[in-house]
Length: 141
Image 1 (tube, rainbow, N blue to C red):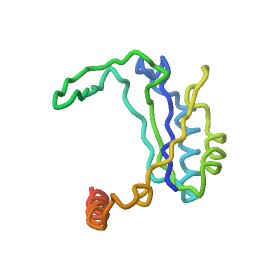
Image 2: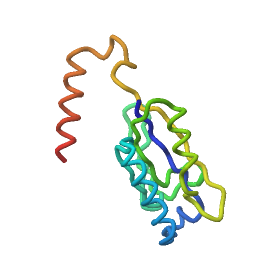
Image 3: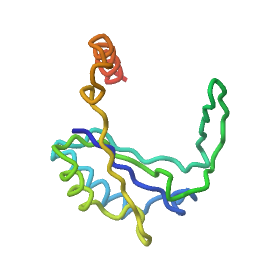
């Protein structure tokens, strides 16, 4: 089972305040533990929303909204992708994480990633084949 582990933004992360050397060290050690356990697929931090954009869809119309975005607690500061046996295992790993936003309350959200079987008969053998080709090609980049 794959899960996306989402680190919610804070006022500091949205203001572009970079993590301290201590937090970078602690997170590096934590990521090393995840890697050694064989569950880490990927991990990255994100720039503040002021450097981002959103594309809003309304039927065939597209409109671009430049950041920053208002609701800080709804924004993402970073993420991991983990391959674990269960949501419970993901929860246990998150509980071991250093506080990603020292000096303030922080929140990490855990969301399961769909696998092909979740889509049922609509995900035809041809679509599965296409998905596998895309994944293989993406690994090369």
